[in-house]
Structure formats: C-alpha cells, structure tokens
Length: 496
Image 1: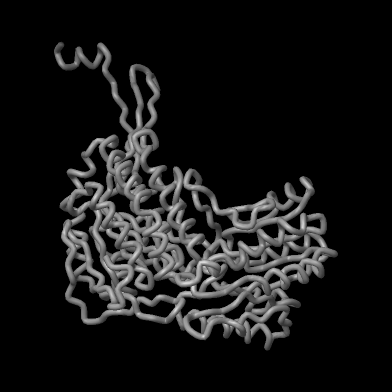
Image 2 (image 1 turned 120 degrees about the horizontal axis):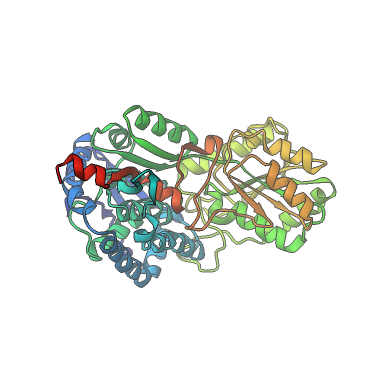
C-alpha cells in the first residue's frame, strides 16, 4: 500500500484470503485532514459482500477453532514482531489519514500492540477451571470455547489501537473475524491486516469489508455472525447494540463521553495544567477519554483559567505530517470542523464567555480548530451536555468537591473522570462517589492498559463485557461445563 504517492490509493476487500476490488456503486474519499487532500478511495460495499465474507469466515472456523491455543498464540507472537518492525511506518500512516501528531500516532500504535502482547498469552487466559469431587464421585470442569464468526466496527479516532482491541483477542480465542474499518481512516487497518497475513494467517480467518451504514446493518443482522464489537458515538452504539441483540448476537458497543477534570485548590499547578492540556487537546480532542468539562473548585478556578489560556496560546497547531514541531493537528474532516465551531457558537449564544477562541489563527488549509476554552458554562448549556469530540474545554466553577461531583454525575455518559489534588481524603471521596467506569487521581486520561477492560458506564457503553483485558476474552468465548462420573457403580451398570 502506498503512503507517499499523490494518486489516491484504491482500497480493496479481503475475503477468503484474497484481496480484490469489490463491485461497489459508490466510493468515498479518504482525506489527509492536515491538507484536505484526497489520499484514498474506499468502496462502499453492500450486504452481498458481507455475506461473502461471512461464508468465508464460517468455512475457516472449524479448522481455526480446532487449532491448539499455543499455535494461535504463535501467530500472535509473529504478528507482534512484524508490528514492531513496521512501527514507524504504521505511525506515519496514522498521522497521514487521521492528523494526529507523530508522537500521538506512535501512542495509538503502541497501545494497540500491547493488546497483541496480551493475546499472546491466550493459552493461559482461556483456561477453564476444575473441581474434583464436586459431588459424590463426580468431577466438574469448565472450558472456554470460541463463539463463532465475529465482527468488529472501529471508529476513526484511533486507526490502529481500536481495531487491535478487537481482532487479535477474538482470533486468539479461536474465532474467525470480519473487520469493517472506519471509512474515514481505512488505510492503517488495511495495513494491520496485511501484516497479519504476512505472519501466517490462514485464509478466511480474518476478512475485511468496507462501507458505511449499509455494511454495519448487514453485519448486525447476518445470521452467520455470533458477536459484534463496536466503538463510536452514543446514538450509533445504541443502534448497533439494539439491532445486533435483536438478531441474537452478543454485543459490546462503546459510545460517546463527556469526561470531567476536577481541579482542587491544593493541586500542583504545573503538573495539573500539563495533564489537563493533554487530556483536552491531545489528538485534537477526538477521543472518548478526552477531557471536556474542566471544574476549578473554589479558589482554584481563576488561576486555573489564567494558566490554561497561557498554555493554550503556546500550543502549536499545524500540519502534523509536514511539521514535526506541531503539537496539535486537525480534526478529521470538514463536517467535524463545522459541527465543533457550531457548538462553540451555540455556547456563546447561551451565555458562555470565550476565554480562548480556537476558531481563529489556525492554518487555512486542512480541517483545523484550535484549542478553545469557554468560561461561565452552566450545566444546562449544550456545550456542557453534548459530546463535542473536538478541542473545546468548558470551565465550570463549583464551590465544593460535593458540588463538583454532583454536577459531574448529572451527565448521562460514564466513561472517565479525574481529580487533581494533594489530599488523599478528597481523592478517596471522589473515587467512591463519581459515577463512571474509569477514574483518575492526578491522571488526565485514566484509560486502562491492555491488561484491564475499557470500562465505560451508562450511555458510554452498551453491553455486559467490555473491550480489552479478561472481559475481552470472556466476550469472545463461551463457557461449557462438564460433569463426569467414573466410579465402580457406573462400571457395574455396564456389566463390567
């Protein structure tokens, strides 16, 4: 796959071990968001292509499920080695199609690679349990088996990490898989799959289809698919969960967020501002763990506002592929920029005040919104309630930690929240009282490592078993219980 040619790449599908151009009535454009240049064309497949992929995955399933876990782990070890070898290539591909800085893109690839490392331990992770003499002369044991053909639908904001949340664990557990990359950033995902094929992936075990809503709905309703993994906005996550569950599938569907950063008066000023800046404006605010609501509690509010504006003014926004000194890149496309600036306008119309305007002073080419801070934000404003998914931070000024936590808990979302304080008492109170799945204490982005699940709550997640960690293994396997009786009485009934 070309990463430098001026001619747009033409994306292909992978079905049954063969890459080919599908018959597609429509193709979409993939942009370099730093320049607005079209760098690839992606086919929008239909239900017929999905059906081909499902049949290929179903054909490959018996042999792959019967492959010893140690051999499946061997594939993951070879894959990990190739990901390390091609690490910089993958990071630059992420930057090219997503707009992250190179350092952010490296983090994207690294966090995904850590999931592959986790999957390498599948022979241990997927072991069952046993209890001899669970009843008189009866032994009990459990074993975990693959669920079947699985599908993954990742978002645009982490082109490497989120696909790698999905298919490595699923495949290591003995399932076959269909990946539908985001139509906005399909190049990285396709390269990830090419490397897995190079590592020795058997034909049909992993298949790739492209497209939009039609393909997603085909995956959610196809009778040959047993499980669906999704990450995206809350409205789409809710739809995917309902549709796939209605058609008898197990589902894990990660949604949106409105993450809170609470700064207490005793917080260390320098480390807190660095952490808040990274949380709010890293990846241009386009991540489900992005800090969106900043609460300066009591006397912390005014100095926090001043230091944040200074730091935001110093942040260099630019073309991340061409300028290695750029510290923040663009948002993904023109509709995203229009939506984000529209929410800023709406916040101002509802009475918020601009502390720092990111709509001006950004590169003319590409899809840029600079770091923005709105002060005087009230809980009922749209800017305080809705997911922005961009580099916009809303400042609240609660008087106490109790008021701050109560405001945070009004949100229908439940991904992450962080507190910055030197007080163990305040940190403990916050961790116990906040209603979300991932909690940070002096940590701006409390996203877990691959060993732990990504535990969104409320409208940030639909399903029971989360992505990553042991919950990922449990999601991609089903449990069988075996009771055995081999005693003298049984032998006598057979005439022995």
